View 1 (cartoon, rainbow, N blue to C red):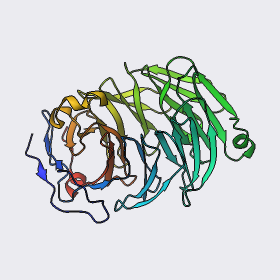
View 2 (view 1 turned 180 degrees about the vertical axis):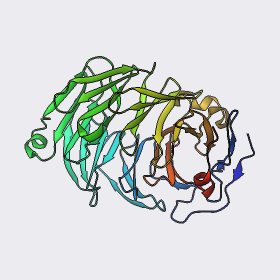
View 3 (view 1 turned 90 degrees about the horizontal axis):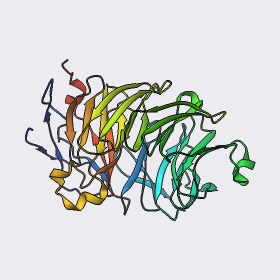
View 4 (view 1 turned 135 degrees about the vertical axis):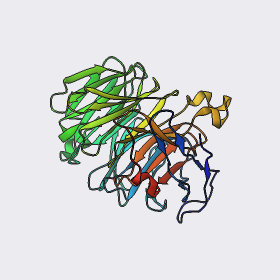
Length: 365
């Protein structure tokens, strides 16, 4: 591996604490040599959480970045400079998931305090409180922003459910009665997203299964098992035709959104906590590292806490970015593809902007 390049210049608006950053060029052992992200601009460091990051998510335009963690705070930031726009206060437990609708009017969060909450994005006002029997693990708006879904954990004697609410019907919210509730009797849902056109949801389970549930009837349309362990994250491509999964079995995999046909596999030596697809290039970024319980027993060098970049077609790694002092729990590409963000077990969110070499790079087959 080539010598890491030191960070040289700052970025306005970022909060000041900046542990040493190394953006390392990575020479692949096989087909390519990639002069990776140069350290001409050090990453923007977002410090707004006291506990480990659980999920980060951009809105559709990419001007805002929402972050949630194992503390009760939901933060929203300007992605261009790392300035904190505000917080959504109300949860009393760890917040596991966050989503914004297509026009960024509403924000949805799910928490270990046994609630899913709807917020006004601009004012921070809580618009709805949906109480559940167990922790809310995943949540999301459909493409139109009118229907929300969330899944609850299998715990305290309660089984895992996926609930669907239509926000256009106030009685569903007032009475806390979803128009559909799907029981998941086998292994609990650990990650879920809306499929194309809002016709179904795609759910990853603790046992490694992938299910496609109809948003109209609730029936299982497709069931596959390509992972051997828990699926930690699912993220769709920009056009929603594909999605990538991240699993504890040390792999991330690419699937067709409609058929759930397995397309590609990206292999690492550590559990993969999150994976995201570039909107512009055939690139996928993976974040992970050791299990959190093992982190203190090793150095950061051995722990492999880098974000790792793979080519989508060739399944080969071509770059790594260091920085976090612990496993990366969530990664996300900016919708314009010019930067990406990562949130870690260390409680920090880092926004990395790519250098011009990244956009000029061509992978040699």
